[in-house]
Image 1 (tube, rainbow, N blue to C red):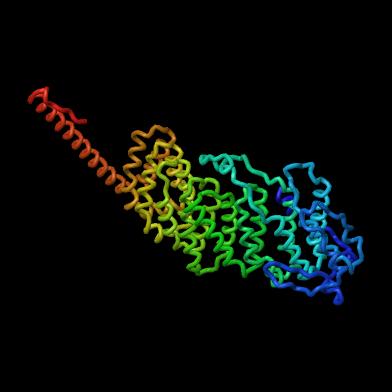
Image 2 (cartoon, helix red, strand yellow):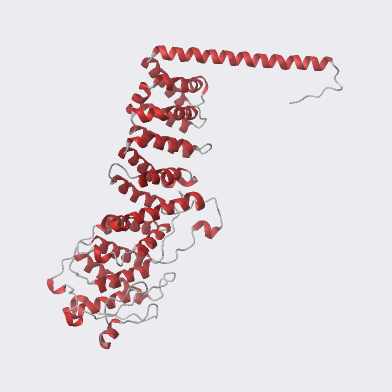
Amino acid sequence: MFTKIMKRGHRKVPKSDVIESPLPNSASSLTVNHASRVAVAPSVANSQLQTASAAPPNSGVVEVLPLLRDVPVSERHVLFLRKLQICCFTFDFSDTLKSAREKEIKRQTLSEVIDLVQSGSCKMNEIMQEELVRMISVNIFRCLPPASHENTGTENVDPEEDDFYFEPSWPHLQLVYELLLRYVVSSDMDTKVAKRYIDHLFVLKLLDLFDSEDPREREYLKTILHRIYGKFMVHRPFIRKVINNIFYRFIFETERHSGIGELLEILGSVINGFALPMKEEHKLFLVRALIPLHKPKCISVYHQQLSYCITQFVEKDYKLADTVIRGLLKYWPVTNCGKEVLFLGELEEVLEATQSAEFQRCMVPLFRQIGRCLNSSHFQVAERALFLWNNEHIVSLIAQNRHIILPIIFEALERNVQGHWNQAVNGLTGNIRRMFLEMDAELFEECQRQYMERESKARELEEQRELAWKRLEAVASQSGGDEMVMVN
């Protein structure tokens, strides 16, 4: 649905329809008193000010205005401002029949403004741009409704359920987001002027909206923020900092946020554009925010995007592979098998971009963990760990360091072959054993000999333990049964 919106055709507007900037003698057609900004124009004639001043928002009165193309060129800028004021009206969408006429007027007005901005024929001055951003702010910046788990009071909500919340006011909200998007991507927009209105406060409120439970709204927000990041270089450090803080709060406080996946999608393209050598700030972001995102229980909702970001870091700077792999091991799940399968998939992607030197730094703890996965009673975990040997690059890394790796995992391989309940796991393990045997028969036989010795010693210890207990039982039975106390 979103792609269809994005590919909407451009309407050609005749030259007579172009909204010109106010003429010199009427350049100050409206005084704008913004709460956070100095007024940009002096006072105007009372007649023009009254014309531009519509009824206050939500007063219940919506005036029907003529189309912009139907009025003289000299009056169009005033009409444009009046249309923006009409679009500042907000309505109650819980009742579809309430204010139906006014809702339709606003919808048509928003559509007209979108067509105007999209056509590229609208040369908006500063007053128009400020009022446009103010209207957009009035519509989209709002208190989000309580999350679904807050309404029910339940904590065990499955984050993967498809029971999405849909914003009732979306028929208007979608048009406002579309207008903001068209304004941001417009080639006629001067960023030096626009940054006065799309400022840090605007961006901060925009990022707050990513917690919306409506996936359609988050999709628009993702596209718009990505465009703002690309067009407004002055905002880039601020955007990264705010996203960082959102992640911190999610990881260490709430573990609940609807837009983590969308924020990670934006970061994926941002990381892809990092210059080399990579700044220390970016490396700290990886260590302090991205890697700890493996901690929350609901990682499955955003793991695909997180894995892409992590892999991008390693592909950008291969020296980060050791840091990433050790970070994965730190947050490796103990009892969550579904999460463990995700980790193994991500590990394969990271290892595929890992060079030999970095692999050698972390291979001992890494293959101890892989050995535990091989012996998992959950067949999907064991099977996913065995699939690592299907990757040629990983096999080459293992082959180069087989003298260290094979002794670590040999026991796990033997236990699978001898007694794993799943036949597929049993068969895959046999294939890997043969691979190691063909790779280095002498090393394989040495590992097998050491394994047999350990097993023999273990059996001897078990026999001695059983014999010691039998002797104790015999002595206890001879000393008199009445005072005998058996300890389990």
